[in-house]
Image 1 (cartoon, one colour):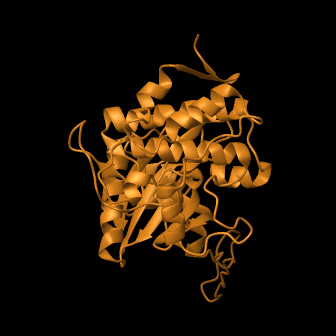
Image 2: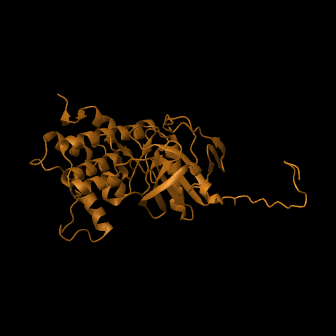
Image 3: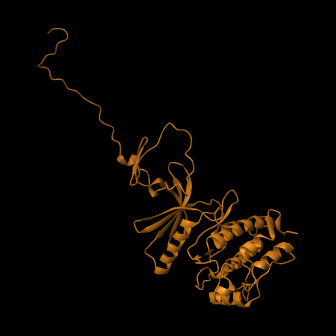
Length: 341
């Protein structure tokens, strides 16, 4: 046989290395997005993400309209309610955190109406003192609302850890809540109707924002009044409990009770037998209507704080100041609620 030639009678056996088996699941994220290198595909389409760009993408704003549920990874559950849960989620491409409120729609009619109301208000509210809503979705029998994440939790949780909040801190809280109420009342014509510690959220920058508009009322005019009976009884104004008409000043009563609770560490409406507590909701409601309005102990707090609380919790709403009136004569800064001279 010549050099370099092959014997046709010799059968060659070729062996190739076995292919590496790669599971398809390796390319799927928790939310079901297929990712291979810089290619991303999900139910909302295809996206190419640069592997070279080292600059972090800019934060998403509520007006960007670029969020989808598939782009969010669930981190943990941070809240539970009768109609759904609130999850801490992280955006895959910006690493931005959001609160995702998921509400199952197999609920009673009144709850559905409250959710519809909340979606309407969230969609129209753009204020630094109100928790921002980025986008809402309906998918597989549930409403999902992407909200601004307030990493400090609620002021109800904060109060549990500190027991009482000092006047300087209360001044900072009060100023922000008043600005939020001023926006809701005078710009959006909205009565919150459920202002309470758990509906005031705080973040690591000390920003306090109003949230949860499930029982809010949208007024059709600046002089409109409502007469529906919803909300949390503890912070409900006397005129609402009595079943009469009420307006924006019902939120101011709630604000006064909330601030007084923050200052003293205790709910300010006392039961007939303090050690036994309230026997039922009706007893609490009667006390709110019939008892004299609560007040800040003058031996524990400044005259300015006592005066502010008194302006909030007048039994007759005509004598109660509005958010606008409370903002004008008071300098709500970190030195305390000091009245302008």
